[in-house]
Image (cartoon, rainbow, N blue to C red; front, side):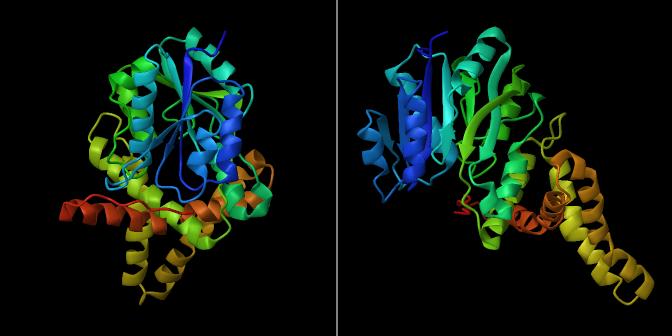
Length: 328
C-alpha cells in the first residue's frame, strides 16, 4: 500500500536538531508534511521550509496549547489535501521509525472500526538520566486495545472530523480526552506491537520531573471536570488517588501527630507503598533498581500532581484559562 493517503502534522518550538531528525524521518516515507511552529527563536522554520515542508506559524497572541497547534496543522493539511484518509501527528522532539507509517496505515485500512493507532515510543537517551529512564517505562504501554494514545499517533481523518479534533483549550491531556470522545462515538483505539518513534525528553533535573508531574495532575483534574460524570468516570480514579495520597493521608498524619503508635504506623505507609510497587514491577521492568525509581516516582509524584489539580481548581473558580506547565 502506498502512503499517498497519509499526511503528517509536526508541532514544535525551538527543537533544533531534534526537529531536523523528525522532519527527515517523515520525509523519507511521506510526500505531505506540515510543520506548525509556536514562536521559535531558532532556525526551526527555515529548517522545515528548506526541506519543502509546508509551514504554519501560530498567532502567539492567542493562548498556545499543543492541541491548538495540532488542530491548526490538521486544518491546513486538509485544506490543501482534502483527499487524505489519515493524519500522522508527531511531536517535534521525536524521530519516526522507518516502518511505522506503513504498519499503522495497513492496520487502519484493515480495521475500519479503529480511529487511531500508536506504537512503541522509546527514549533516545535513557542512560543519560533516571528521569529519561522513567519516561521510557511510561511509553511502554500494553499492546492491544487501549483507552488512549499519546502525541504521536496515526488517526483516521473521518474520525478526527467527527469529534472536531482536539480541544484547543486543554493545556495538557488533550490526547486521552479526544480518545474518550472517539470511544464514546463507537470508535476504537489500539496500541500496536510496532516501533513507532524515538523521543528526546532531555530531562536531567528534579525540577523538570516535578513540573511534568504537576502538568499531569492538571490534566487529570481537567479531564475529570469535563467527563467525570460519564459512565466511564473519566479520570475519577486518578483524581481520587492523588487527593488520597497527597492530600488526605498527610493531613491524617498531621492530625494524629500526638498519638505515637498510630503516627509512626502512618509514616511507614509511604515507604511500604514504594516497596510494594517496586516488588510488583521488578520482573516486568527487568531491574529492581529501575522498579524502585519508578515506584518512587509514582508515589511521590502525587504531590506535584495535587498542586497541578489545585491549580486547575483555582483557575476554574477565577474563570481564567490555564497557562502551559512546561518541563523543558
